[in-house]
Image: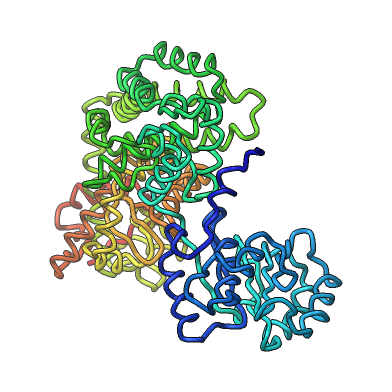
Length: 581
């Protein structure tokens, strides 16, 4: 006798046979029971979840000789012939190969004729999203007001491609992916009926591979049972599907944590010798680290893992990784996975990705050393130069306080009260305070906002992403720390002027702003300030009274000028210093 594929032999013939769609089954059965069956239905959802099967069961239920009934009897001649596809009034149309306007016009012309064999004509249009725009337009009026004896059931895996005018004329039902437990129980039931010996963890792994599609799971089970002569084990499933045992992933994770590059390459080579493909290994490895992250962060995460059969055995491995290292690992593997799609030698790129993970912490330490060396690289100064710098800094501080207090040069011409010529109306000297960002008062007001606290909480992620993008930028950027945020701008204070100027360069600023957009979401602008300027502004905001600096010129007979006035004149010249009586 000819073998029938399991997914065909075990196709549901009644609503009670369907798995995982109870919310849809109950609604349809109530509609039939109360004689409120609609003229048009839209069944949408992933492949292999029972859309076409539900459409055929509904066609049998409304046309059953013992009905209409919530369940077809599957014993009368009508039910048997509909199941066999032998009833001319129940048409299953493949829209992928009948997508043109002519086919839909032919359907529209024939639908007006009464059924000859059953109670209602049923048109099941599979993959309806494949119809052309003209075909949809030809179907619109008929779909909205079909004859009383006709019913449409549209099935699709991509409902977003359907025009809104089509969706609005149908009752929509969204089929969901079948859960792992329901799939495993159904597979076990089929194995018992088919006299197939199967291990429970093997059936669980098959269910996980199917991604919620019952048809895919039955196809894999059919293939493996044929290969294993009716006895299905977990190892055989792994070998047939190209999967990798979790123990092998654990060994690879141990090599990564031990920074054992040789062990990592040996593991990869053994996988390649077993016939595994590099892209499939990368995919499974991503799932593995994703499961480790779930177990690390979420209590009782067994139901959230993708490929873990025994989550308790993964806790030991998860303890070896921090959450940050797992995030970095997944991010690195994801980037390399995208590049592998276009690589001539995917295995080499897979090996490079793993070696990149091995050297990740080493590069972090190197980057930290580089940054420390850059900070401490300032040349030693003589004592005289240091004293001069101290005096200049003190003078600059007083001048800045004067500028904030509103001191301006006199507008009059001629001699000042002290006999010195007044300042010419030339451009004033640009001080360090001119580099303060705009809206400084608003930055000060928002430095304790909750939104800025969220940014501070994610700042380590920002620094890590900057380091991954460009280590040299990270070496300079790590000198700064966020002090406030305003609208779409983040204000970062730097302790060293050279670090600030380097980050302000267009190329470096662009790297930082891209990372801010990735980590914080949205578009962010980088604003910078010196740390001591920020501290002074904070102190000034907390104490409203500000010292006003007036440079006064002593009388000739008073015995000369103050020494710091002479210093100011020597530094800036007589044209830029105004001495007021």
